Length: 297
Image (cartoon, rainbow, N blue to C red; front, side, top):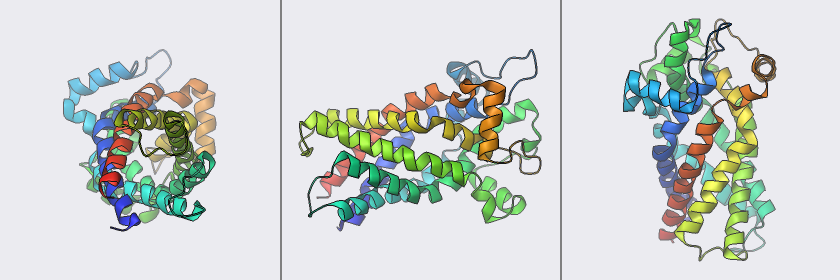
């Protein structure tokens, strides 16, 4: 197999491991991010992450934690294939000679480049996922934006294409998606490489055990979210905003309104579940990728 094909296959396996492990945490994160501001004197719908879990299980059962998984599961092959194959091709371009190890700074550049590529795939997938995950929270608030219920990922896509400007509607939130993916992946791959080299005691990381790979991958995933979380909050509120009666005119406007109404805390709604998800999910992703890539030679 060529290097691109190996990266495609290994990226697909890694992405599937990440999704299965992390999706329930992601559901809670989006529910906390997208819950509307309460009326004066009224509490938020969810008091916190554990309250969101309890309410979701009570109302929808365990399936509720996996709501919206169809869209990312259907595209996980393409998403992670692009992420790891673009990173692999950029690694080849930056190497002084075939097989030469890259520096941490070079891995940061590779991660940023991969982030640009995956943003195009991530934006419509994230929009569909966020609409499904946020649906129950927004419905309970009486928001006009959920007057029409979504029956599943394909139903979301059909309704967006029909009533929100065609294909352009599926790319709502592309700017904050790119603002998340580019620096986020730069940080993630940079931290991953730095930790691997630290644990290996040098640039040769080929002998690292699975425990070390999981540690490096988990902490790298945490670095992703720590570097871009407020951007992810803005992306989520933009993508679930009502098309006909929008609350936000754009990313900057959304950022300002959240900051004005909720302060800095509002930009970190759902941060706990995001971090709780990122460590085990990315540990699983990087381990699955490395093991698969190694087995393919």
